[in-house]
Amino acid sequence: MAAISSVPDRLTAPADDFVAGEGILRRQSLRESAARTYARSLPVVPVRARGMTVEGADGRRYLDCLSGAGTLALGHNHPVVLEAIRAVLDSEAPLHVLDLATPVKDAFTTALFETLPPELADHGRVQFCGPAGTDAVEAAIKLVRNATGRGGLLAFTGAYHGMTAAALAATGDTAARATVGEADARVTRLPYPYDYRCPFGTGGDRGAELSARWTASVLDDPKGGVQPPAGMLLEVVQGEGGVIPAPEAWLRRMREITTRRGIPLIVDEVQTGVGRTGTFWAVEQSGIVPDVMVLSKAIGGSLPLAVIVYREELDTWRPGAHAGTFRGNQLAMAAGTATLRYVREHGLDLRAAALGARMLARLRGLAAHHRCIGDVRGRGLMIGVELVDTEAEPDDYGSLPAAPRLAAAVQQEALSRGLIIELGGRHSSVVRLLPPLTITDEQAEAVLDRLADSIAAAERATTTGGSGTTGGSGVPGGSGAPVGPGASGVPAGSGAVEERA
Image (tube, rainbow, N blue to C red; front, top):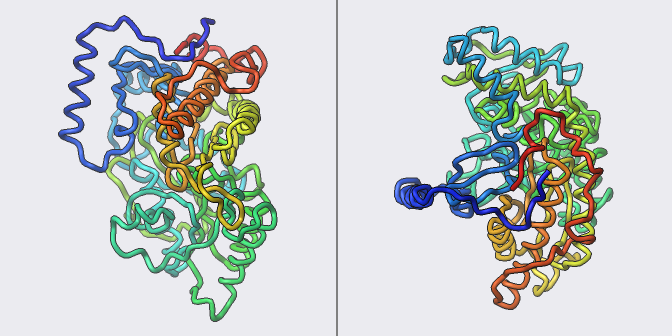
């Protein structure tokens, strides 16, 4: 396999491609709304992609650690996904069927239920929603409100559940919620255990226990001001909140608290599902089984698809209580079936756990050489690096404030080195890595090397006003330090082995 260089290769693309790309970017800025996000920090015009590699109209190749915000479990244009889509097209099957039963839909439902915890697989129901995860969150909230006859909802600080009304009300981002006026008074905000910036100033097991005690207390206190809620909504790993994994013991306590009080537990697995965190579903690590699971992103195999799966006793709504014109997306169901089965049959969840652990170890070694790295955390191939302002005063508990300017500089330095990364967390100061599950060991090394170079360059640029260019790796052991064994561990036919960036 050819070596992956530390800077993106410039291809011999025709000059017309460069001109066309510049024109596309210019027209986008003139025509699209001010709400666009990724396009502002990632001015790339993708023209071809395979696996983890994206080729832009600028003639450069990039390693994609964004993966459609976690949608591309198998990377871009994986052969099994393309084959599944072509099979539907060649069969002349209807592409738009609302919620009618079809062989394609039956195959998807079967593949999905084969992956679920036994309690949901044996006694569960599935509702196909609109094309986005936020619509599935809306459906989950409506479901539990209808089943319980109650209106309140328990949600957590740092949460992100989507941009529609109820989903946005449950989201913790105050800036995002400010765009829709008054917050939903029926949402009670609870403290999520955030070890690095613990709301109780303790961190660790003690901080998580205080969070659980606060939750139980506010529900049981007759003077606490909280009516019995319709449900509790949480993420096992907060994604947009900054890649914050919930402690397994805390998750079990939430399951215990909700079960004892007759409160349905909704787990948002939109980004964590389909092997991302090292098990097929993130809830498996703690052993809990929620009453409702919200699923989207990777379940559609790169195409729009969203569902909720829930215990049959909650299935009390009437026909039409939740609908959506595009809930019968046949191409997405076929692509999703192929993805679910490929991840399961090839153990890509276990691969994510092993490779993610090695990547975390190297990043923590990198943190020892850069004070600006406040924390490194994650599960599987869902990784976050929190950047902090080393020139500012720490808070009362010793944590340095977020460094949004540095994080933005790291993102731009990474892009110049052929690495696409996302920012999230408080003040957008957490570098997020969401590579496809088919990432090879060699690609993982390249990601870490390029990120290390980018952090070093951004540090220099933001503290000294320098150019921000760098040559050395900055990762302990340099580019030759292995992330894992020589073999990639990706099954043949994944399309990842042949790539170079």
